Image 1: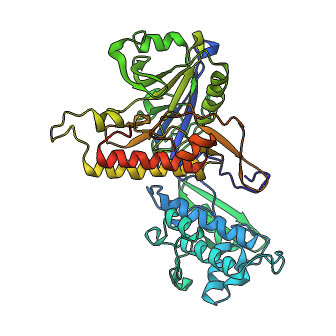
Image 2: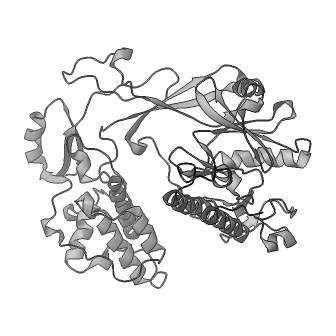
Length: 481
């Protein structure tokens, strides 16, 4: 999908990661509506012919990241050429877009694949050729020869110079979709097994036929989105017996408003024994929600400040939309009883600050090893880059400290403490504009940059300064102040 500024938004995640989805609502009270997704691995074929990689049609195929690379390459070729991946309105030799562009590549006429409707001079021929080249690299038949998306992004960003890898001759490439005359396909259809699904698109003279193994499918009932399930190989009628359904489901919860009484139970009424640490703007407690979800509850101070409460609510709604492996996953929030409580998933051993500054001064497991320090710095940088550049809005964290970083059991960092974060929107020219003109200085001395203290204006460079301080803490083992 394209927004008003023609920025692309990828949607349609119904087959994402080749997982089957079942959505159920567990409604206890109107205030505690929970949205849970039940996920299970599957290797069933699903997708659109023309975008599915050739390995998807193999028996017991497994989706990989290179499957998405192939589909991305097809979309690149569509964007540059202005044509569909499969278009029956074109002559026979041009019905399959990929075949046509591969043939032009072999004939050294690659630029002829460009959309002829584009006005001359409105684009660079070198850019068009680069996109076509990348599209063909991404759609190579052998998935191991396709590039990864990190390389593609680096090339498109101009961070990799030099010539692109040479394209092979496509004359010897295996066919992606078989083309046959209508007279020849009729016999093959009559002998096709009932366990095969045949997708056929027809013109007056040509059939496009793809056959692949497919299981029986059933549509979920009640309040579920849908369910796909395999019910044996004998073609028997579908059964709704729970014993026939996959049993390796796991649950994924989306953020919600959590009742205060549930957090009282989870933390034993914020007992001292449940206290994890005193943080920059409150106290952190651990507990178990519903006696099974290990959570971290941050109880923020300054609860009587109306401006802070408004900011707290609006920014947590934005925080719930952030998704990065090095950001703490928000489970929910609570504003009852005058409280400002933030609830995160808590699979962590400890906070970075505790591991750095509160060890026993004895060489051993209590000392953060260098390989872990290296990974923490690298992963934290990735999270900050996501906030500054890769999300659809720009986020200035304003509170990057060692006590805002939670470490999981594998010593992977999770950045938290978004109470002071500044969410910036984009204007018509793609630049960021602050939604809040308040320039009050908020943060922890020792981590705040000099220009931020002087002006109160939140900028990405202020976060970079704070990150630098954390890097020095991680390397030296000493506190900022």
